[in-house]
Length: 137
Image 1 (cartoon, rainbow, N blue to C red):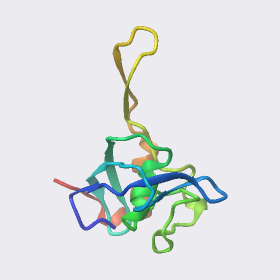
Image 2 (image 1 turned 120 degrees about the horizontal axis):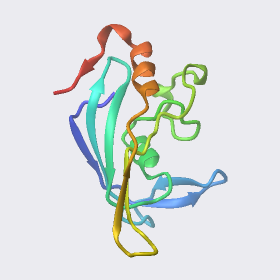
Image 3 (image 1 turned 90 degrees about the vertical axis):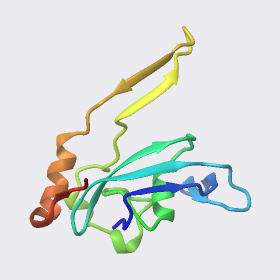
Image 4 (image 1 turned 30 degrees about the vertical axis):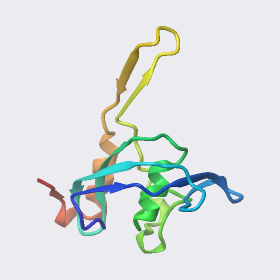
């Protein structure tokens, strides 16, 4: 469980390491990466985080959270053992791209797409710790 309201992870990352093509923190050979996390809502056992990445490596959010000792519900690869919740309680990995901005390859203009956080995420979090759900101010 995060003990912070905001956290910036600047750990350098190496991609495609190991047999499962993982991304890992690699201080010696990794490339610069930045993930900014903000605690949105929490319970005693789980939290809803917002994340903005400043670089865009494969599995970056997952690898940086793992480096911080946290995991994403339903993530089969990057889950610290102390944060394990049995997979039958999580219908999918609880990772969602709320917004993405990129330069359109045709007209070379920035485009932004947004998709609201699925209601199932909030329902799942409340079902895991229904008595102590709290919104972080």
